[in-house]
Image (tube, rainbow, N blue to C red; front, side, top):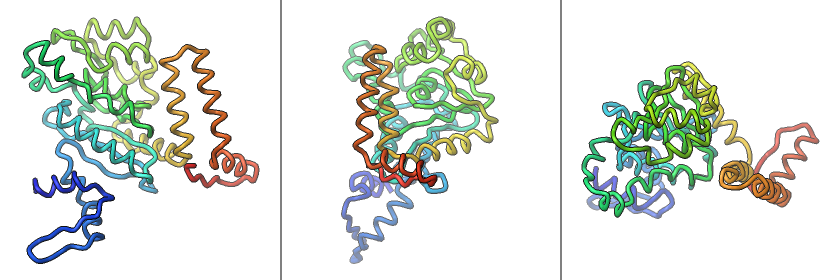
Length: 302
C-alpha cells in the first residue's frame, strides 16, 4: 500500500502509467480509473476528500483526526495543501469546502508537535507554519463549514477561507495566551480585519471564545445553520458559485482580497481595471446576451 501511495502521488491523474504485476501490464485507462476511484483513499491519511453537488463540481475536504479533535499537524496541513492543488488543477471544480466534524472543525494546532521545538533558532530556521496559509493562495473560492470547536489554529484556518458558515454550536477563539505564546497563523491580523480591533484584542488577550451567533453578529461568520444542515447548506452555496464563470469568479475573489492590502483609491483603480478586463471575455458577452434573451447563460470560463 505504501508503494501504491507513492506511485499515485508521483504520477498524477494526467500522467501516462503502465502498472506491471507479474507478467500483466494494466492498460492506461484501467490505471486512470483506479486512480480516480481509489486514489484519494491511498493518498490522504488525515483528511477525506470527495466531489459533491449535482454536477460534482464542488470538492469537500473533511479533516479526519477525530481523536485529536482535528488538531492541525504538519502531515494534516500537507494533505490539505495536496487536496487544494488537485482541486485547483481540476477544470470541473468550481469551489472547495473545508469542514471537520460536529464536535470540532479544528481545536487548534497539535501541541505535542510544537513541544518538540525547543529554540527560537530551530523554529525560525525551519520557518514553522510557512505552509499553513496555502489556502489563501488558492484561486478558486474556499468555504469553511465550521461545527464545534474552531480554536487557535482552527480559527485561523477558517479565517483563511473566503466564506465562513457555522453550525449553531460552533465556538471560535484564540486561546494561545494561556499557552504562553501568541497566534502565529493570522489570529492577530485576519481576526482584527474581520471583527475590528477591540473585539479581536479582547479575544486574543483573554483567550475567551465567542459563539457562532456572536461571530455572525461581529462579521466573522456569514450564516449560521443547525449542525446537521451546515455542510449541505455550505455545499449548496459552493454549487451556486461553481455555476458561474470560473474566470469571473477568480476576478471577483482577487479584487475583494486585494482590497485589504490597498488604500481605497488603489482598490477602486484595481477593481475598475478588472471590470474593464471582463469586456475581453466570452463569458461577459454570453452573460449579458443571455440576460437580454431571458435564458440561462452558458459560460465557457474564457
